[in-house]
Length: 201
Image (cartoon, rainbow, N blue to C red; front, top):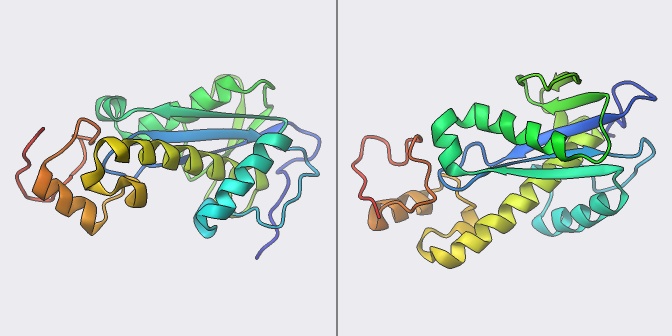
């Protein structure tokens, strides 16, 4: 496993930002912002997609205990439909940054695009969650908080298997949409079933 970098510029307060759920058919997009101590170390820390669920859950506890500051923000499916998923992802990141108890001097953003946050500079980093510790930490928080939310929704709508697919467009999720129709949590601006008619709850 490649060693993650602690910072882009030393002696500067940097917050890593990432989101989870952009490609889902249902539920919110969730973003996290994390400021880590520059000496933070953990052997497991990596892009959340490279970790088991058990390791993500354990790392979340460590990150929340040791971060200088962290915040998580949700933008729901209705807002996603109103402003599109890209803008909703930016909004979630902005809301997370705004909730930090320590104001960062610079933002490290996972991905190649971002809407500038007022009066804070930023750097976009493709695959940043596998390069910078703070972005990896943000990816873990965003993923675990969103997974918990979708597991709770699964109790309300068990037919869609959200406890396992978390709202992503798996075959079983799409088959459930065919069989059961959509729920109030589905993103109607997304192509839920390509070239097929949907029935609505």
